[in-house]
Image 1 (cartoon, helix red, strand yellow):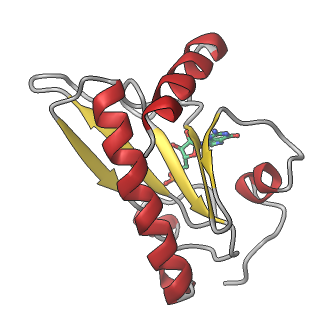
Image 2: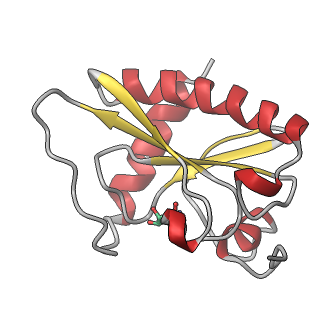
Image 3: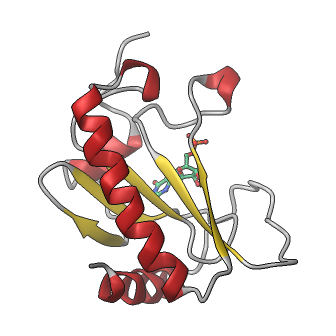
Length: 139
Ligand code: 5GP
């Protein structure tokens, strides 16, 4: 399958649609998931185009995981979480819905149930606030 440059994350990278940005460097962008499954659900994407892990450039993957570690550490502190779950889906059969490689960062608390992926948008002001708090803790 070919990479489609009109996917929603490519549009976010080009600034054609907004996001609640947490962090950006030369290779990666981190922002809030608009339909979070837990409080503080973040996404990290590479700037280098690929559908998913399977067709990704290995160097781009290395940069991606470096940012994932950075954001996961900041999100754990920001949300006062007990742990972090990292999720990543590949192709429709693998649960992927947006076809630009991305990694989910889910701050988890003991005993806290994860919301179903309902497609319900979170409050914009809350996402903006969470992005700001996480950003402040990125090292
Ligand atoms: P996937 O199922 O492909 O791993 O996850 C795609 C994720 O992107 C979902 O968690 C979904 O909530 C999120 N998402 C979909 N559209 C947008 C959007 O326009 N902006 C942001 N920030 N997240 C999105």
